[in-house]
Amino acid sequence: MEFDSVFLYTALAVGVLTICTVLKRVNGWFYSIKFSSKEYRVPPGDMGWPFIGNMLFFFRSFKLGGDLGTFISYFVTRFGAGGMYKSFMFGKPSVIITTPEIVRKVLMDDDNFDLGFPQYLRDLLGQEPTGGTTIKEDKLIRRLTAPIKNHISLSSYFDCIKKIAKSSFEKWADMGEPIELFAEMRRPAFDVLMQVLIGGDQVAPHLLDMVFKQNSYRFSGLHSLPINFPGFAYNKALKARKEIVKVYEEIINERKAMIANTKGEPRTNLLDTMLDTQDDGEGTKLRDGNIVKTLLWYTFGGYESVARVATKAIMHLERNPEFYQKAKALTLAHIPLISIIFAFIFAFRCLVYEEQEDIIKRRSSPNDGLNFDEISQMKYLSKVINETLRMGSTETVLFREANTTVNVNGYSVPKGWKFLTLLGKFHMDPNVYVKPKEFNPSRWDDLDKPASFLPFGIGPKMCPGANLVRLEVSVFLHYYILYYRIEQLSPKSEMETCVARIKKI
Ligand code: HEM
Figure 1 (tube, helix red, strand yellow):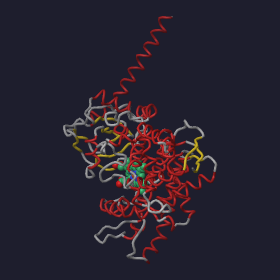
Figure 2 (figure 1 turned 90 degrees about the horizontal axis):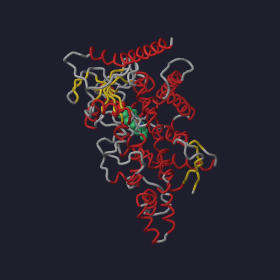
Figure 3 (figure 1 turned 135 degrees about the horizontal axis):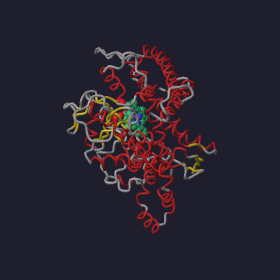
């Protein structure tokens, strides 16, 4: 009897193991047979389980290290350091790319690769107009929204950013109550975006409030399972997107009348610029649906990310107290010997505060406020921002999809396969960033734009808001560093859930 049960359990275990082993390989066999023709040569790798591929492993790796280190090193250790690994991710056969040279090649190639977001994400991000977007329309949109990248346009938004940053800190300090820093920071970042995107000051406040509220459901949907069924966050997010579309359509209709009456006048926001040139005179007409789609994309990418970087930069500075607390004591102490010793020990830490003080000292009148040219003098602050971007984008995945059979690095990858770039692989590389998990802005003294530092991507689809982000975050940090401090209620909480009191100093 005893022998029977041992036999039974052993047989069961062997059976389960065999089924698992077969199942684990079945996806790989399926795709090997499907793409066995000589036309293709896919890189080595592991296609994971049927249907879910490597997604469980991918999410587990997120939980473990937050930088996908385990996930990537599995492929590199098992399949060599070639830099391209086949996998099955987000419901599609995919290639994970891990060397900067290959990533750059793929991201710069707009002819052979489309944006490869999974469909459930694409539905959240935008809404394709009937008939889709033609290549010409896409190019026209990029041309019309390009001003957001340039110096002159950015300078025209500067006063608005300053006003919003100053009044936000004043409001939070006056409240005296603890606030959820990241959640609060989202509103001023949203207000800046609205000004740039649609001329927020010309829009009824209740419409802006509506977009802000509905968009927060859109973000919740991003972090939930894509189940489009009433009661689920994803379903609510899709409904929220529809509500935002209605608001934008209303604003577009109102604005069209204004545009018609002010032909030839300079346009100061992206919506007016797009409406002004709906017909480029060379055969390309930008339909309203495409303008709405563009607004939806910008609304998704253009403020929550900024608020996150501003919050994290503040938290990094606070959690490295020697960073500028001592710097402040140092500048106030004015004791030469101590200053010399401290300056030696805390040289890089002093820089962030001193730099801001120096900027004020150089002003011709003490009543002068921050001006646009001073931003380019904030060299150390820009390293703080780089370091925050580096540490904050470790979870970012850039998606592309081959729109034809593509030849990359000696491989021939079939049309429809996704190409995934995991920024964590680059931004946490100890060969480039010594002790990568440490916040150390001074590392940027010796780093001259590493080829693998891509927080905003690269190529034609690179983030158009990159310069705006740097400007906006610099203005916020300028006011914070000089005039405010935070008192954290639970100093060990996650940065994004930190509750703190803002104090004026
Ligand atoms: C810290 C803040 C931000 C980060 C880290 C960030 C990062 C990125 C990244 C990595 C991409 C994808 C590039 C690719 O797929 O190759 C992207 C795309 C995009 N971003 Fe940002 N972004 C930020 C802020 C902004 C802001 C402020 C705006 C708008 C004002 C913006 C608008 C967009 C748009 C419209 C796209 C899509 C571009 C396209 O497909 O052509 N982003 N961003």
